[in-house]
Length: 312
Length: 312
Image 1 (cartoon, rainbow over the protein chains, first blue to last red):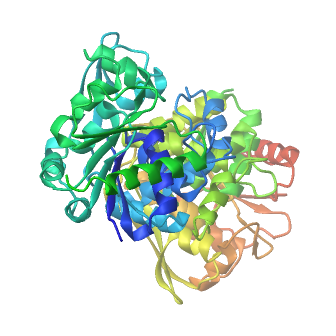
Image 2 (cartoon, rainbow over the protein chains, first blue to last red):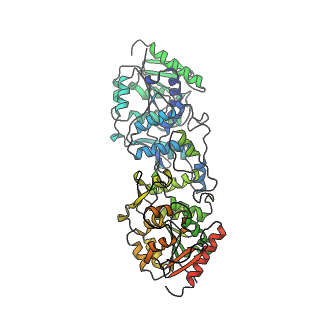
Image 3 (cartoon, rainbow over the protein chains, first blue to last red):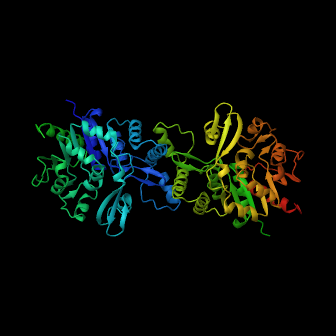
């Protein structure tokens, strides 16, 4: 039975699940809707960290140590910038720069980010559909105790997510339209997944695209998140720290509550109990994906579990 | 005696003379006015080939084999672009890309090309003043028999200047203002030199900046070109071929005639006689600069000869 699966994803955790799904689903049945709130301009290049992480991961070229960037990439350009006296706080691999150059050139020609993602996917041999959440520029801004409002990458990379977050906003989101491709994918989805990505930094920007959250809520299909919090800690990145700063418990239960009615299913990790999960369908799996096999097994387990629901 | 020397230059030949001049003049006494008609956008980067050739040459980092680009530069990004299926007809070295990234980022911030050249010069340790001919975008267009009108780099690099040239135009030149820095340098110059650069492709765009040619003509100082044509051939590049295509003899005499009253002095090569040179002051030197010593000797010979004129 062909099942159209749409997955909302941000950075590395989401990319790992996407990799697992891509190994077991026919390419036409898998669509990734990717956060673009982290996108920014740097040295005149348009950089889309989450889109690139998804594309590189699905292409099998991602750096396995970091989970982002290209395996074996060199940094000749970065070293030359350093030679020019630049503070090279954002890592730019040389092959990565080739990606940014292509994207920037196409953007300057007026090509949409959706079409650019499709072109890069084609050139990288990535077959599932990789869709930016919107073609409009949206920029996550992080209001911090120590520095006031920071651009996302200044918060995340330059300051290594150490500042204390007071609030978040997504600049440009009111004017950001859902793309026809995103809308069609969500309307036709048999299953909607939310990857084990940071709910505030990676998933909220997607849900904030006008009409997108409502469209997901309206779909009478399984809508399931995989927890990014395991045993009270983020698998990677600032999720747990951020939750405390924003006034939540750092727990998978708090994530379940935060998603609320958006979802009707929730996958927690086996190290946590299911107590306090508010979605009607809940299950625990080993969610920390440390190998490619593990990514595939988790994807398989989630899909098989969902197909056993009977009804939503 | 301090002599303010201003030199109009284009690519490699002009850069060699500039290098020689920079070794013998105090930095404050040397100003280069550089062609920007070759500048173009490529993969979203602003590339200024002649400015970079001058800067790299004066910084002592230029690739000695080509006369442009950076010695020992790698091409990781270019190879990645090729991996993406791109036709990489324009050579982009990695360190070179760092230059383009800095420039592009500054341009996007609204910094003028004059200020950008000054910043790059400072970072490269280049002390003479390197001035773009204008801050406005100007684009040399080459009308060819075989392909119709081509962008300059398409003609020069992609087609290796093999198409037959019918005419040239400098798009945007009418709106290009002379910068205060260029105007001041020309007004204060004690000697104005025209490098052994292509008169049509490298020097004409500079002279076409509104008011610039008239300003040079009005200055009662030595105004001297060094021939780019030696023994009926271009030292490098398409000058001789272009001259024939545009209806001139491929000779240093034709260059002398072409510059006409703009100049009052002309330096030909020892392999040519001075017959037919129309400027009142003429001399022959060994003008083909094959070593750094030779660049210095030519610069010295030209300046010493000019100082012996007595009057203009």
